[in-house]
Length: 538
Image (tube, rainbow, N blue to C red; front, side, top):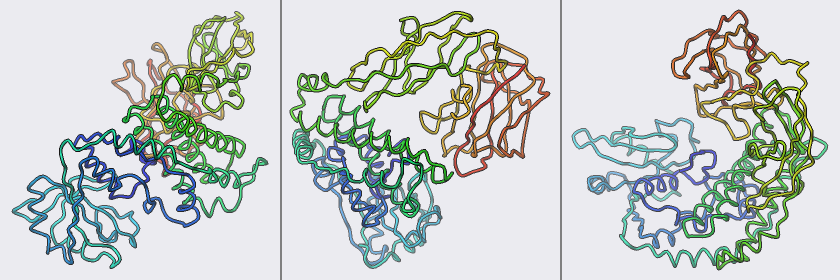
């Protein structure tokens, strides 16, 4: 349902049903007209009532929405699965998909499920001659084969409090009433209330002095679930707004909220694992998200007629504060890396324009940028300007006159060079971090990848003898160093099957090539791979 699986907050049945509808090319965005879940409701059900996210009473796939969409769920009760066996065969022969509740402990293809819970499976096909059935399941299981006895055992043994139903869906053509859904959405937005106390609760767990409450450890699983629901529901709601023809600006605002909540979720998860907390950064992000939530809803509620001129008038008065003065981080003879402080108290800044001698030379959505085509012993006037989601721009920052001193030569030939990766864990952990010359920025690969890589484009074919890799705790036990002249055909120049992380200095390589790749083949942790810095020396 989501490209980012950590946003999934619906239970297994709802995710399977949505995926089934998606495969039928239904315009699913109409479903999400009321997907915006109040954080008060999330706080009550997840934190106070101690529900897990798959038991959360979400708005998605309500009976009303499905009927308005021309989708009718059909429930066929049974005592034993054999009672509805013939009907199941008939439905499968009609290319209908059948949904069944099963006991998780009997699910053979996924042993990670809670054995005391129930689970949904989707039966997609029947092989007549062998009485075998094809099953699909989340997250990535398809065309699993079970025989009827397996299905019987899985279905007949579910707890008594769970209704035994065979479920399928009838689809009525041309039954979608868009105007009715738009009216319902407007009413939902008009009466939407959220005290946002969940964010106050989160803030109470962190002290500006750097200490954290013991409650953070006790409640971490539920906090993670709550953040998944908030991030996922804002993602779906933004798509619902777009589908029902709201101004795209609203889509952008709720997508920004979703991304920042997901960023907070990842920051807190990593902090818990490492037992190291940047409490100030976390508190600032919590406060920012709370303000974003309040302002985005108010903008919607104050413009329910979706008047473009009125919206423009509302957002034109929003002032973008000036970012901090840019400072030099690192430089060589052709590039300079700069950083700056964020705009003060402006929650919607999405990008920064970087100016060299008054000319725009690039944009960045991070608080740093690599300026290319620098001449040594030349002074440049460097400044930065912020831009927000509404299209407003700040005044130019204070100018810093920066000159590269050629008396200080950096022999790292990888510094500031272009980098390509197999994946990035999140946007601010991209590949450029391994060549930025800083000790506290890093690249992280997607946790779902077993094999990941990062390669550096040195610009032309060079000879090199030494490579230094500074690993984060998520290092590679097995990895290779490869080189290439076309980024397609790679030659192994170093192989390590006993990596221990930390800083590894590999010498006497006799390497030659334009591209240098670190190919990570076995993880040291359950996460992805992560590297602070890669340096290459001739």
